[in-house]
Structures are given as structure tokens and as C-alpha cells.
Image (cartoon, rainbow, N blue to C red; front, side, top):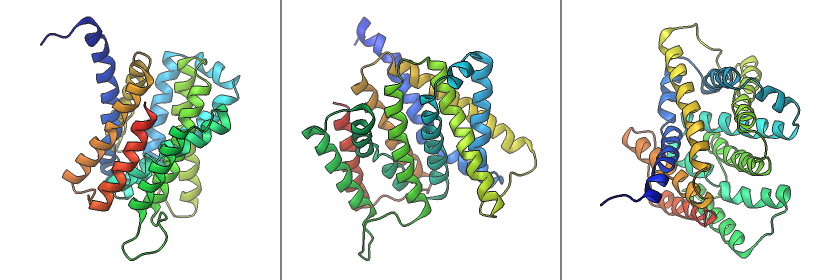
Length: 292
């Protein structure tokens, strides 16, 4: 069956978004390979995002002027940096499926933050999304032996924190959509390097995080490849999101959950149980409702 002009015009943006979702969905595996080479995920995040900052600086040096004169973008620096540090650390040390699902509690936080920062009304539809996301979180976190359904491991805490900061990141991107794309991209990658770097330094001083290993071709080439993949993924996200309706973009991006879950189960980095499936369905449902 032939694809008409409209379908062909939407195909490449959709593929670009899928590439970005795939990059994030399977990123846990190379992070774990880097950790096995001695590079903690926080230090790996510093190296990867610093490389992207260098690339953006060479491509659009004026982005620094925009960033330095726009205080609101520094909120984006903090939000994006926390998102990346928490997510990358969480999927490296924990059950990938659980961490990704808790990360995708984003619709719950987005409703609250949009009300606070954008003045959006709390509608019945927003209330339904909050209820679905909260119910899904309770099901995912409910302990086998009873007790409160709260995050109980470092990875679960990182998943929740990463999802909250990701919601803040997205709300700030909407609020600052009139800013130059290069300045917003610089803010996001700079945040990844700075926040992860501050955490790694402070935890390294306490002996909670190992210092980076000596330079070696293995981990250095791996970090370089990941930096390139994340930079291309970010460009693909901006390309696709600018050419497709927001609801379509959100639906395609949820495929990250699929990529992460399938790859983790196949490679033994995650387990799927009936409660996890049920809770995950509710969380993903809330995300899909947000795309309507």
C-alpha cells in the first residue's frame, strides 16, 4: 500500500522520536557496561553530557549568551540535570522495569507542576490521570509482606525523583518554548554534567561513590559513543516534536517503557510480575491519557 504525502511527512518525525525513545530505553545496558569497567553512572553522566556540551558550544556558541542572560533556563539546568543523574543511576543499580515505570509517574507530577508554574486548571481529566498514576504506583510499590507502598530501595527512590524532575523539565520547556532551541539544549546537557558532577564529587568525598578509573580506551570509547547517541537522540526529539502534534509525540515516547522492559527482561536486568504488569498498565494509561 502506498504512503501518501501526509503519511510520508509524518513518517520521518515518528521514526526520529522512536529513535530517541529507543536510545533512552536501552541506555541502561551501556551504563552497566561502563560501571563494570569502573566508571560509576554519575561519572559516566558527567563525561557523556560534557561531550554534548562541547559539541553544542562548537555548533552554536551564542547559546551560552542566551543561557547566561535568561535566569529561567537555569531552572531547566537543575531539572534536566536531576532527571539524568537520577535515571541513569537508577537503571544501572536497580530493576530496570520498576525504575522506568516509577519514572513514568511523570503525569502525576506534571499536573501539579503545570498548575503551580503555568496556571493550568485542574480538570476532571487531569484528576483521572492523577488517580491512575497514584493507583499504579501503589500497586508497583506494594510490598509482598505488607506495609506502606513506599520506595524501599535506592533505585526506586531515584526512579521517583527522576520522574518528578522530568515533569519539571517538560513544564519548563513549555514555559520557555520561545527561547532559542540551542539555548534550551545547552541548558539540558549542561545540567546533566553539572548536577551529576556535584553529586559524584560530594559522594566521592564520603567514599559512597568510587572515583573515575584511569583513562583507558574501553570506557573512554564507550562514553564517547554514548555521548554521540544521546546528542543525536536529543536532536531527533526536537526534530520529531516540532513536526508532530504533542499528543502523537507523547504516545510515541511511551515506547521507551517497551524498549526498556523488553531489553531488561531478555538480558536478565528486570523481572515482570502480575502486580508489576497491572501497576505498569495504570501508569502507562495515565501517560497515554495525558496525550489526548
